[in-house]
Image (cartoon, rainbow, N blue to C red; front, top):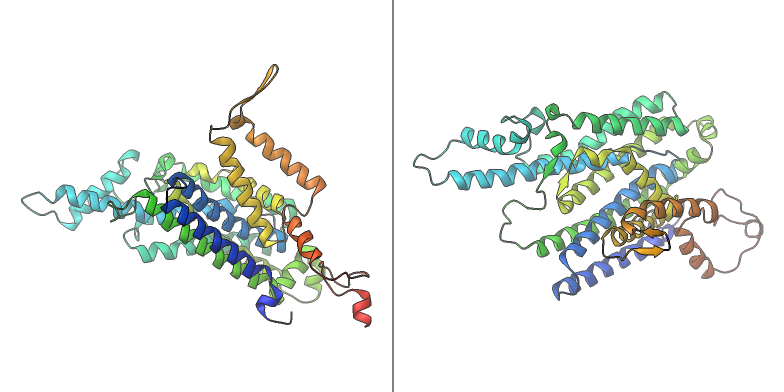
Length: 407
């Protein structure tokens, strides 16, 4: 635990440097017309997914909690910012349409008209109580963090104090996600039911700004938050707190026997993961343009786990690599631009076969490369270190070895 933060985390400057370099290159190419606006949006959303994967690796790779409910926190972050986006944009449209009247409309009339525009699709014209702060950007930004965190805090307190672990905890987190999704599908849930929140790509007051510019703004914001998220996660797992998390992952009973409040540590990291995931969702869905309850279905949480497993759990850069690679490869196979492959009587349509390929990749990584794609980075870094011999004297790779301890 000694040494500076950067000395204990040599991957931090490398990741931040590569992230900044990639962002600058994409910006220059977009300005010169070298890449399309849709591709810039895809890259921005990919960075948001990488941030969500970081949060997933924090609880699964380091604390050993396989949470299949993180996608709920991701979608809630999107809903919180989406409420402000829809309210502010609709207010501007209604105010402009009513501006030509002889008698200026009152604030109450404008709000009623906005309510009719937003909630008319579910047969209502009134703002539900949960939209009370939708007119305030600072309040909704705070809710982006607070709502997922509060849900994780309540759920985690109930689950961890009961000492639910392993597959039972994973099932409970998945049940929480499914229950929340089914509730939001109802029209009276206050979030427009199955319709969700749409048109989120249209920023209020930015009608004259082209989408090519807006996509770059979101790319920069996503890169910034991913960099900050990586630094935060690296700081959390590199100190004493991280050592205790790894101890809980490897032998929870022993850590409890040593006197550490295991439930408190698990609750803290679970809540922190939810907050980070909520921020990722708040940046992702304005780029996607829509968020609805279908985004919370359990299969999406399984995708998060697959990305982390393919990248290599227990390695923050592995989670990022897994999410980025799978997201970009998925966009390539499902874009419809890849020609179908005919193999005699069998015709492979890549859009339909992508999930099969993803599943086989997950199985292959689990069987033959348990360290994931991040293991390739480990191999490269080991070649740069001097040869060391002897048995490890610690639970993590790279611990002092016998000969070094005796020297």
